[in-house]
Length: 406
Image 1 (cartoon, rainbow, N blue to C red):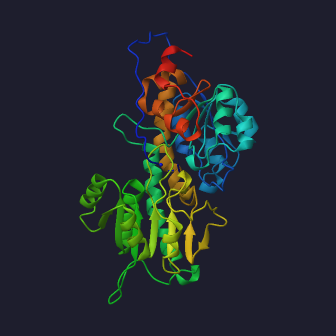
Image 2: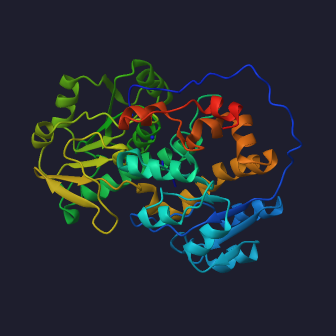
Image 3: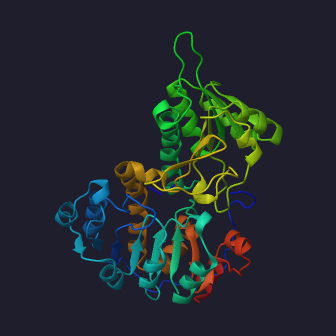
């Protein structure tokens, strides 16, 4: 998520059964892997670069790439075909031929209708826009859905989320710097000060990966950086890594209100994997900000941290509320489409190779904790407790489903 990660529930720990699966002679086999062109929310990334396709083909897989899928990331069709992909004319043909579909964003309504029985779908889920109807449709088809936001390895890291969040953190500050300029309707100030002129103040809500990379970038500009979080340990870690060049505070209402009131830039970056982002900045706090200030809600795809935020698009990226410029694009890394595609490819290809080595998606889920944690629907069942709580739906433990052979 060329992406891309809410509060309360952390890593879900299912019950691993004591039974051992008997080997049934499954061996590595070729999968038909589809890479469709992204059509939702002006997405410019593509899930796999030509180099990633080349690696998959060299390992015996067949890769189908929809025409112009990589165009906006400057990967021409010819480059894909030269490295072993079959370029297909439209999405319908691609979905009809492939067992496994790898996307950047979740399928829209039209794409959901193209999904086939028992396909595997790997993509972002975008919790801020997910609906029960979408999940039920996947379950009706028996689709195995694996979400970027949920893929968590045994060491607790979220590899795809981390990659996208590094990009989001850096870009959020670059974007804010542009919108502070007079020509963009901002206050007409620079992030970094010059001799005799103090720097701008950047307030970052969240000490996770997005917050860390936003802080690094803002410090690089020379800004005064304040980071707030409700996790004291995370604040200590960030202070340590950034050599105490930032100011930190607990994310209490009092501190948030004070910091936001004097901020030139507010970056919304607080989230917990698998849940909606917490609402930290109320509308009255935004109204108290100085005109021409900038809010970049970098976690709007998970619902956003600011009450006045609403999703925007690349063609209309910002709006003004209470005199404050808001930038709230859910797929922010799409504006660095080529970089984000390389980052996605670096993480996705090893998982795809693991599925091939396992011989089936079922065996791959059993063997690999990252893929298993990433699965949110499997064999007509919802498997994420956080989604079940969000939508009032029943769920089943993924380990028990795999072990039972359902």
